Length: 418
Image (cartoon, rainbow, N blue to C red; front, side):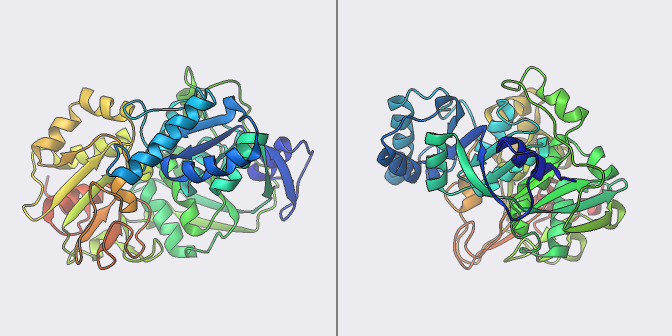
């Protein structure tokens, strides 16, 4: 019997069933590229002498926008011109969108049962809504733009079961960091990760997206969560077209099964230079920081900003720390303003930016100098990830980021006085 990934790939390839290890050619629902991965995709596409399947192509500039230099301006211009040349409707200019994965979800491209590819490794985020979604190279994206389909190797699937109520300030980010710390950065290599249990059912959609987003940091092809009422309610009035939820069979075969108790998962931090190098935040109190960064496709949603504002209200960012807050989309920024969260953050002396990927990949607006240390809600902490190769990035949830910004050192939020 089949897992979610196997069922989706079978349906999209016109098969009754598929087996792990098989190569299939499957129809994709959408193919997304951003300003960094778009240019090489466009160069390959032009060699095909073909027309793109317009309704399937989504173009979202987000990595170096607003443009930081001439090179990034040329990248963005190439995307703009490609969209104009082929009359592509799903192009979202600066000021109209945000970080690509968040915007894909907000704009209703993502839905249960869909097969979505993106020329960005964190496209696996969309698995939080029950889609099979994965990152591909720019060449594969170009091919899918022309053909509307792509080949896939059917992955084996691992099952992760998390039960119980999470502790105070423990978020989806902590759950996925805890799992990666357990299985390692290659623990799910080319596998699909499916997440189950009472904990997952309790989590908000935002926390679920954080979990699916970082599946790739364990080497996974995708990270999928069974869709439920929270997903269906979110999609009402938002989703484009019809969709059909897909669920694993009760007796589906999994390569491995892992079980965790939520009460055993603390606020967790990934130390340099791997997402698997984890430790409880409470054990890292001696680590001072220079920068606190809240944002990205991992943790830039309204729930994350609410959490930071809750901790920062009536407090100030430490005199030796700069805090940068980047809502993941225009919609999130507007909601944060409506709720008064931006005012709270700015009163605390945090710097608030419009949506961009910028600092997450060491691009701009938060780049680290030699010897500097950042506590960040992003997804990677490799050598030089956010700047100088001698800088350090510690990954954490938004509550830990905010609490650390206040104290000037890595801090479990539970340490702060009321």
